[in-house]
Length: 99
Image (cartoon, rainbow, N blue to C red):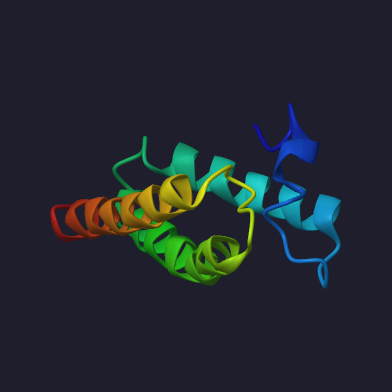
């Protein structure tokens, strides 16, 4: 979605960053990490990379929650997204440990 609808993500990215550039860079990183999960040789390092990326993006999701009107739509959705972030971090941790 980072490449198909890049403007969807502009409200998630703080104004101090170049929004389109950050969107594409994150999209490329996510794509590469996603591909890495398909290969036994790279799955452990990829899971670690996903975990780090999720930690890196967590402050942006918290920042979005603190806004009067979160980019995700509602405060409830913002909270669910943060909880999902922790679930995804746990999943990446499990992949890392089991590979």
